[in-house]
Image (cartoon, rainbow, N blue to C red):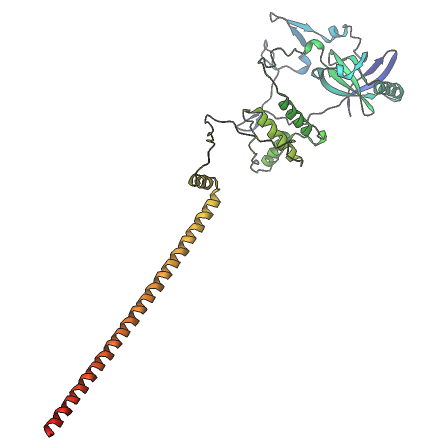
Length: 377
């Protein structure tokens, strides 16, 4: 890694030659300004306001603008006369516990590399002293034309330095916290603790910049002449109406996403807030059978109601078919019975008529025989 500053650490009477190396790097994607009509680059030109012409870098110097707009030139020779004891030295001024440093003060991070073989032993001595004391070193150093405050701590086998803001550069949080009188219940704190326990464990190496990855996909698609991929709509947080319900749902969702049991130590029921409509009151008495049936039917899912309706229709069709069959059979039976009765009656009447005619014939014959015997006598 390329060093950006060379100097030494002043540790009492011990001087440790070091090189300052950037400990972080930015992966953000930078854009250029272009003319949208022809994609031509837009560049800034440095123009002198008095002469109205473009000037070169060699013609540009520094100046301090006074309150009335007056420019006070400051040359490099003027800066060389400044008494900065930390111009090439990181001067350690104190050792304090790490929790004394407010994270609000922490800025850019650097690695301090040993400057050659002679620096190896004092460098290692300072590193091991910081390890054993569990403290950090507060130091002053000068970088890019100004004196700065820094904090030295051990990272692995190296010494890292964090640039710190001066105490008067950190603003007090006045007017930031809510001024309303809020009461937090113990149950709400318990749920918040449960949510923190569930979400608290994470491997920081698994976290990545999803926005940058999506932006790279868009750039790759545009470069290959393809349409940019469609991105999902970002999730929007709704207004929190019921804090307890939101906490319970958050804990449940977090545990389910990690494969844990969704229960919260008891059977919790989250009820939605009423939206201007009063809940129906229970009368305490038993509902009528017809009302209960209607309520049960109304609570059935649509698919169940459809299935029940189809079954009822099928039952009615079957009953109708049976009724038709029964009526047909009854009609046939009645027709057959009537026909049989008529046939029997007709046969009986015919036999009776034949018998009557035979009897009358016999009577006539007998009468003729009687009359014939009488005439013969």
